[in-house]
Amino acid sequence: MHELGITQEVVALATEHARGRKVTRVVLEIGTLSGVLPDAVRFCFDLCAEGTAAAGAVLEIVETPGRGRCRACAAEVPLERPFGRCACGASDLEWLAGDELRVKEVELA
Image (cartoon, rainbow, N blue to C red; front, side, top):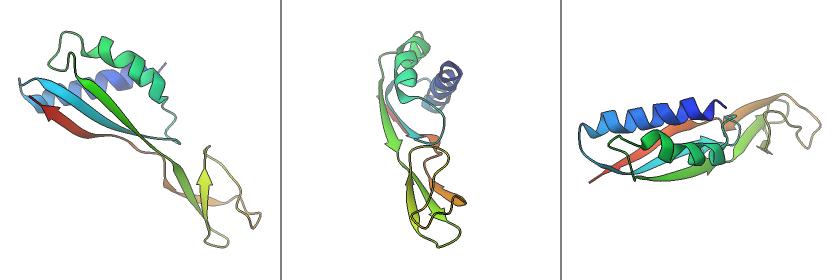
């Protein structure tokens, strides 16, 4: 479960940014295509935050849907997996969105 390591890093980034102040909220963006399970991150967050400036903080996860562009016809295609097929039949897609994994916001007391 790589989500534990990712969550540890998110907490480390938030507490580093806080510089000793109390972290009250962390907003994390996770794309559908990132390979990271939002529920697993939620499960790990309180455990990872325990004993840090982020203890008791609220974790808000923004899930970004996957989108791609067909290289054959330039149509945009919704993606739920890292692969897909365009309505024109082509499967050569450029990812436009959905692979994000970033801390969007850290709220401090």
